[in-house]
Length: 250
Image (cartoon, rainbow, N blue to C red; front, side, top):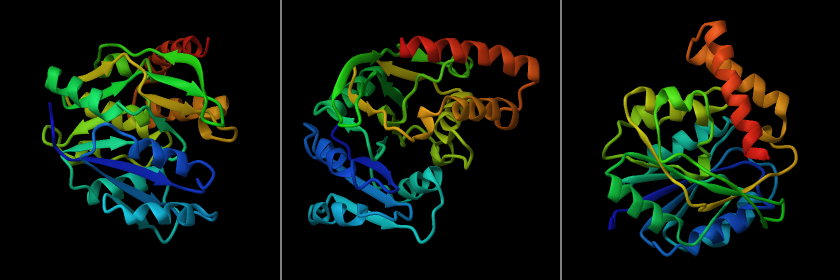
């Protein structure tokens, strides 16, 4: 079993309502060798005040950005500051199950993989699971991933000893998370999925992912302007993406 340090990267923007639950879910982990790097992306609410008491734990730190740079910039700042072998992403409104790190690291050791992700469960705005589980494949390649955006940010762990930092850095584009997974997979790295829910995905009203039209535009932009696919191939991939997105919500 790995005993290496895990760096948990949490971008924070106006997350005062949820960040306490998110931090508590990290503190409840059965795997305790972690550091938490929170990056405040110019919050205008009480996020910093909610976070402040947790900074008494030396494993927790807060980076405050002067201007709003977006989630990709915040996560990249966290990666730059990370000291751990493993890089784990967690959004400021999501919740990890207590055995998330322990089980996922054991899974990564078993498969000797550099990139892993897990299944997850949808939750209400109050952080209560609704028993709707999104299953994930045991492995995924670049060609498979561009047709199925099933990889959820708060479930991902990278092994930085097996990945170049440039591959982990998120591009400043809409849907920067999917763009990053594709970036890693395009390099020839295979992703490994632990098909066991380890994260509650809080579906908050007003988030980008809750706006279907916005989501469609973001994915189309990735195909055309990031991956530089032709219109026919973009349409081909998009049909599979749409079908998988609908299936996940049934």
